[in-house]
Image 1 (cartoon, rainbow, N blue to C red):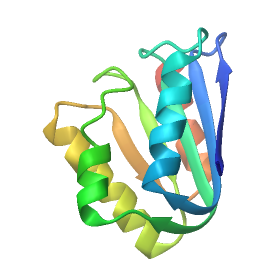
Image 2: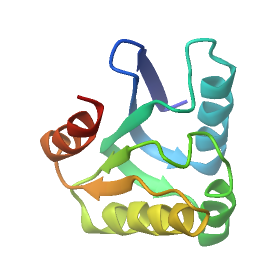
Image 3: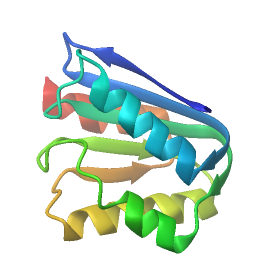
Image 4: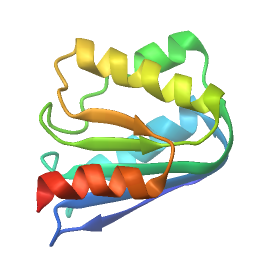
Amino acid sequence: MPVSSTIDKDRRLVLTTAWGALTFADGVAHKDKLLSDPDFDPTYSQISDFTRVTEIAFSAEELRHFARFDVFSLRSRRAFVTPEDEKFGMARMFATLRELRGETGIAVFRTLEEAQHWVLAKIG
């Protein structure tokens, strides 16, 4: 599975990294692993680094289905990082779908530094 997460309990933050071709099955497996982790708290914030992802191999329908999963709190601050236009657009589509479900703190960034600044400003 080309996705891993580290949970930083002190900062109430989940740091997720993905690489290679990311499929719907990879996303679901990672979601299930995160939800079963005893250190995970859905009120934590998240930074997802997709800078090493070569392809987001989700269909539009799979993306819509994945956006229905409530993993984090609707008020968690979540940042997705991807510099490439195509993946940036897919991440924005996911963010919009989550916003339609009431998630208020989700954003997409081109650099990890921008995402860290935005998420950590809220935590600090």
